[in-house]
Amino acid sequence: MAPETKNKLVFLALCLGLVFLIYGRAMLGDFVFDNRPIIEREAMLSNLNQLDKVFMAPYWARDEGLYRPITLTSFTFNFMILGSDPAGFYFVNLLLYALTGWLIFLLVDKLLSQRLLAYLCGLIFLLLPIHSEAVVNIVGRAEILALLFSLLLFLELLKNKKNYWLAGLWFFLAIGAKESAVVSLPVAALIIYLKEKYFWRKEIWLKYWTAAVWLPLSVLAYLFLRFLVLGADNFMGSRTTIVENPLKFTEFWPRIFTGFKILWLYVQKSFWPVGLCSDYSYNQIPAISSLLNWQAIAGLSVIVFLIFALFFFRKRAPLLSLGAAFFLFGFMLTANLIFPIGTIMGERLAFYPSVGASFFLGWIFYNMIAWGKFSKFSTAELGQLGWPQTVLARKFTKFAPSLPGLMAAILLLFLAIFYGAIGFLRTGDWLTEKNLFASAAKCSPASVLSRSNLGAAYYLEGNLAEAKKELLAAYKIYDGYSMGANNLGLIYFKEGDKLKAKELFLKALDSPYPYYGAYENLALLSLSEGKIEEAKDWLGKLYEDKKLIDNIIDSYLNAK
Image (cartoon, rainbow, N blue to C red; front, side, top):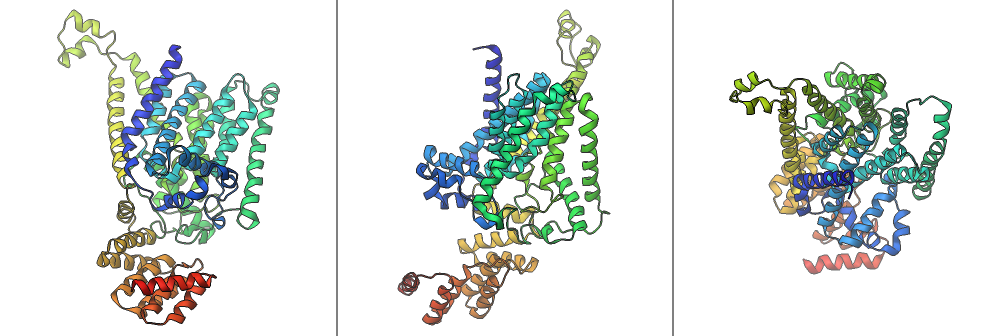
């Protein structure tokens, strides 16, 4: 084996070891929250003969407006190879994550031919704790695959002998994993610019004209399939409620100002990952009506800096220019600045743009080490540090670390321990739904979704007092959350207050996005009062099969 290949494989092994050390205990977890639809669709996803149906299926429900066939297909192969145990799904996520860090190393090494800088960028990317939601949340695989295939696209464009059809395939797989990977187009253009010394010459443009055909064709192919699967009504985006993203229901300028604030929160949590949270929904991040907010100003300043860095560092420090591109194009889509998306904020959405964070941090540490090459310890300095003034000490100066280099190593070690510990602890939040909802309610106490979910978890435990406390808090934040109203109705039903329970069940149905499970609860309430015909009427609004309705009622009466 060639030394070059061996070194790369050794680094891949290091990436795998690091990822499994930090996040490995995720394999002890279960399918939680957003992951449950995977197992609910096991009949389709686990059948290789239905792969065509998987590829032509919406990501979840059609009206959610999401089409991610590559991510769904990956779940199919998970079922086929590793079975239905959640450990297998987590294992693949960790494997793909480590591979993504390795590809970042290859990208930097190929583009800049600076091996140490490439090592630093790859390792720092894997250490960033803001990735925990994408890595240990099974459906976060969409984020990982979107970046992984984008990196394969970039590496293909950097080859001396390029296969542009393969570049087009990688790009299709990236946007097929998650739509937001479309931002790889401007990033790819910048990578070509940084690679080619005479980018603006006609022969360079002719050299890449095939890529200019294949990449847009990939987008058109994806959009065509998306239209076939989702239809015209859901083609443009996902169904979003005010609970998931209040900015969709906010006026233009408050949305933009709040978007600046959200951008700042993303950047802050990328570098200083304290207070990571799985939920920021209504009303944890209230809309702001003025730019006179320090976080909004900080977010706007970040955008100005990224635009400046994108152009200013093209020749002076290409890695910073590329890092700015990852940051800028990635976050502009996720911060609700261009258009409102399906959620107000989610740390998984920082996965793609945080490549920029690893580039900036890698560049800083690399230059601290490089600066130190010119400032070795003298024998006098060694004496001050306790080293004897001997021939051995004088010889040591030939290979002694520089003071800046030593500082860089200590800081990097501290950063690795700090980031690694946060990632390790954060993994525990995703092991069970109770852990997840409790941590979300703690870090996002003003979120109706977090408080309501925690209340539901207490209810399933039989802890009605704590369940009622959390559900009342959620109802006070926003009484229009239909599932929250339904769950609070269940508490009153258990307490015997049937009038209040019925009021809340009806409220859960009287919503732009009703919770139809409330019909069953209304039927149960009617049955508890001996009103069998009324119960059948309620179930009739949910089911057309009269035999099924009779079976449900018989089951309840027999159980009673």
